[in-house]
Amino acid sequence: MKRVYPSLLAVCICMTAIAPGASFGQCTCSGGVPATPVVNTFSLPVTSSSSANLTFPQLNPSVGDLACITFDYKISAQSVTGVRNLAPSTALLPTDNAQYSPTGRLEYQFDLLTSAIISGPGLNITKPYHTTYGPDSLGAYGQPDDTITYGPDNVLNGITGTKNFGGNSAYLGTGNINLSYSISGGLSTIEGGLNFSQKIQTSYWGDFSLTYYWCPAAPLAISIKNFTAIHYANSILLQWITDNEQNNSNYEIQISTDGKNFTPLGQAESDPATTGSAAKYQYQYNLDQADMGKYWFRIKETNAAGKISYSAVLMVRPGGSGDEPISYQTYPNPATNSLFFQFDTNQTGRYMLELVNTAGQIVLQKAVTLTGTSQIRLDLSPHPPRGLYYLRTQDLTHGLHYTTKVLIK
Image (cartoon, rainbow, N blue to C red; front, top):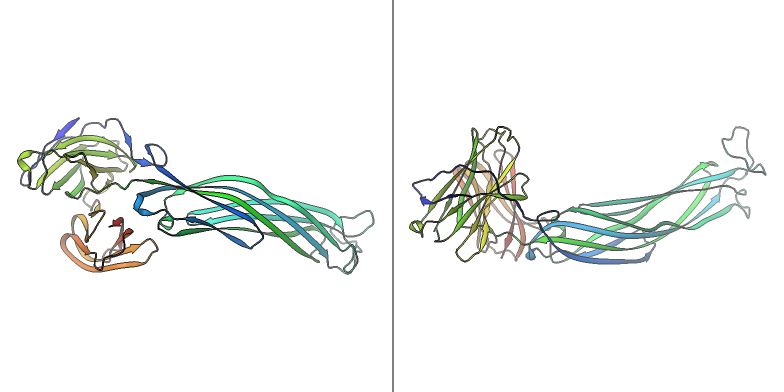
């Protein structure tokens, strides 16, 4: 693996990238380092309510990042259907489009369609059930045989399933999340007309589990500043600055083609001569002519004590113009007293910063105007409660939006 060595800020050392080495996975739900599961269960007793809440605890965001969620279910339902003929006569006319019983009376045939529906943020499950009743001959309205009952029928008999979906901020917090479970449907006639009344009573129950898969929050390397990735001709130039350079620090340049799984490209080691000062690093990744997809880059920093942290992840499209702002970063993360939002290049325009909690409420807000600068500072005053937040940055001049997840200590 090739190496890059730092210099004082006034000097840059450039190196060409080599082919990626063996890949390793980030903490994910499929492939790579497996995420840690947290399983929550809920058992719904028999109910005939129009809908029921499935209550689960949220995932405390302080444990890490929510990678994905799995919802498992086993549901059952039983229905009893009652029908009453409202027609004053059961005599058939020659034009009736209906079946004839041996007695020549009008016969009803019914179609029952029901659906079990489970819904919540990022979740929508529908399990239908269909059956046909009849044909059955009913007496005229008011006669002893004007009514018939079907069931009880197991319209859902221990139906099981699994639904996987991505991490959703609604499931983060220290309270509860409610999913909705209901049964809907109705009865219609295939034969016999519309002169009837119906009563359907359904009882339902089930067992459910909601599994959170979380990954430890990747600490952001606060010593790495101005990390940029710029596409020039047939290469991508990576540059970053470290302030207050520490001796025996190691910087590994990493690349990804999916934004999740990264491979090492090269390494940069600190130079004792730059300790305590700012050092600038430069790395050139040469593109193949067939490279027209997206690429993600980041820097993995390992200090002398073995602590690992990462830069912001930058995305480059070789098919793009190459001169647009590539990415941005928010640091420090976790934050204590203030947050910095920084573009890779200088910007000009009006911006609005909003710190938003997981309930969607704006906790702090700041409006600024940038004139050829790249950094915005947001003081955490008054200090919000500890927990997970989203820093939402709006470029009011150009109609762009940027959102970053941050942890406030």
